[in-house]
Length: 90
Image (tube, rainbow, N blue to C red):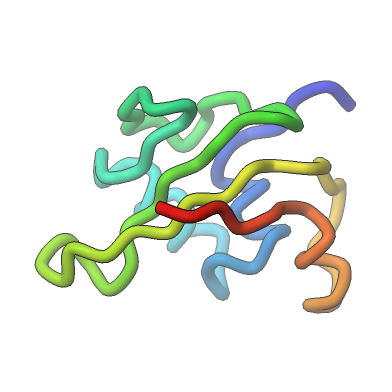
């Protein structure tokens, strides 16, 4: 697997409980892939891509930056999800 849908990767990496919530996050336009804003839940992500995600909504103004290390075909336990990405300083 060389790429994966953004919403599915977010779900597998446990950034939200439901895949629909991951799709809404992507479609909000607040998420960036390699510094490029996206509003498509079907955007392709690959290992090495850097995601910038809002924390606590747009009002909070906090962000989380992660580098994708691996893709996953299923949503596993939290320990497996942590192996999919590494946190970077914002």
